[in-house]
Length: 527
Image (cartoon, rainbow, N blue to C red; front, side, top):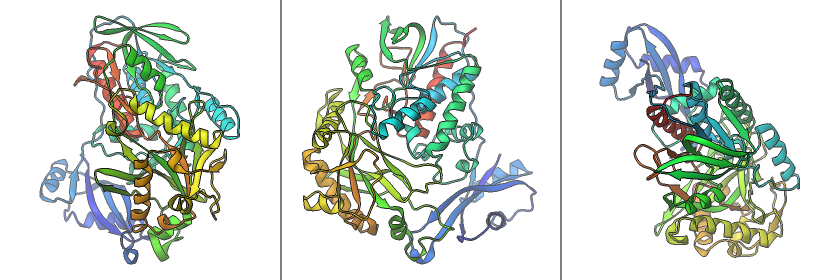
């Protein structure tokens, strides 16, 4: 089994070979090295006079017993088992098909795993395939009509298809490595397996999701686009069938891999008595800086050094039980129109793999909970929708409600700035107090002040705020048991971010795999 040598300090111009040699010297063993590669590379820019990389190195020795012994003695070494996906497949036959509702990361990896074990899942996706979806979204960004079923939120690949494609996660699941390796196998850059903060980029994601879809179909699965889950028939604690916009399907299991914006589906499930609960999420705005100003704030006099990566950040502050933080930071990215309903404005951020745009953007958001909007199952949905509609009323269209940071802090919204905003549908100067509750604007004000002490660009009055950002995570959780099935419904599996069990591409993909494993344990594959 391989070992990881951690905490190897390296200069910005140091070669991979010299970093690996430095790491191997720390082993102090004469055992033959079978393989050695860079594993993770992260930048430490906390001190401007000592910006450097901190690396870890993947090593495989000829003596496996020695690998484990070294790790037991040296805390800077990590003993790593190779990634694996080892399903236990049932022989219990069940009538009907496994139906996966949603083809974002959770539904995609769930369906892929099932298809590769002989199941022939039917995937229902209300949006279009990625090629048609991309054109539909671009038409909307160009001032065209919003398609409520195929947009930044809905369609092949889910909301992550129009994002930075970040693959960072806080979960510590052994399936994370497996997901990364599968992404590489479907065309992602190999570096995602070594970077401390891997990202794919929206441009690469579009090709990858198509390749995964083609793999599922080649194994007998089906992916039905422009096909919406409209209803589920329950009997004796089971989902017997689903009704779609194309007809009814008898089911052996139903996976609810819904996106966080599937509000009409949440409403249907609530009406059917599926156990759900309101959950906390966050709302706020996109803040847009010049990428060069971000890097000056991070790197000081070293800004512009080609050896340094694109500057990115993650900031947070808590005060009186409330939190404000930055989320989904997109270096060299754009702010995009992300609405999925008529009459409501939604913003989001996106960047391509190169991250070579002039501006950087991130969500500046404030946590809200049932204490702020009510404990009813759909109260969070109504809360976010009201903010989106407030913005639409202020702008009169899908233009974003916006102001400079200077205008936000002074209460006199303006758009006089050196920054050229990237939101394609245009901005309208707006008073954010007419869009958000006071708690949100108060915490955004505190966040800007606190973050400016950490990064000078947050004290720049020319930075642009474009609002609202309301789709940070799902406002509901579809409650499930230890078998990952919905309470009281043995073959209904809430899954991924929309169901309230993930927070990004990686955790959603892993949750999809774990749900697939549970299904495999209970029912046999198709003949």
